[in-house]
Length: 227
Image 1 (cartoon, rainbow, N blue to C red):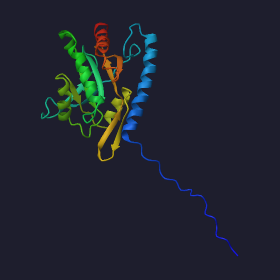
Image 2 (image 1 turned 180 degrees about the vertical axis):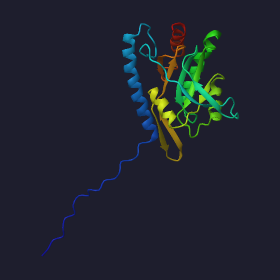
Image 3 (image 1 turned 90 degrees about the vertical axis):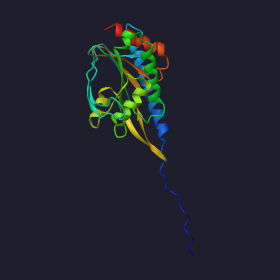
Image 4 (image 1 turned 135 degrees about the vertical axis):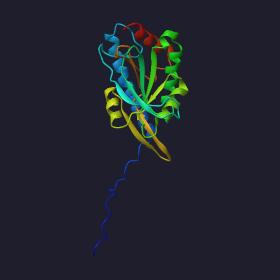
């Protein structure tokens, strides 16, 4: 007489569920924020001026780049070269026009900072948005987006693989994130980089710091007044 074999345990496993894109974005922002907090604490110990943002070591040269811009949403693109310095203080932010919150808030606060400056300093301060989504962000769309927040804003289109090299030079990470039932989003570093009139990186702010407009403005004016 034979007995039926006892069924063994079910050893099959199912693939883990995909992490929603917004969870990845939150984790990425949290990691960057912790990194910036550590850098901010270290910078406070070595900088004679108590920057609100994170100070760079003295003599940190900013990287220039080339791309295309449009002077109006419908104008044909033209070549654009960013040469750090040349008497201009520049805030550089890497973002994209389909961004739901961080990018529009960043540009809005940067323009509030600019509006608070005296007229002579406004003329020496510019804001550059470098797109991390060159597939969708045409130069015309970037012009329309950047100028919505302030007429002096410039949106720069840089194709791949040049974009990756420029982003790496600034310590910027970005990654395409698929969204179920919708177009893709971009996860990216949320910092703004301030470059002085001599072409040196002086300070960076995370977007969570930008709502404190007066403190960001104080950093900016110190950089403008202290070569």
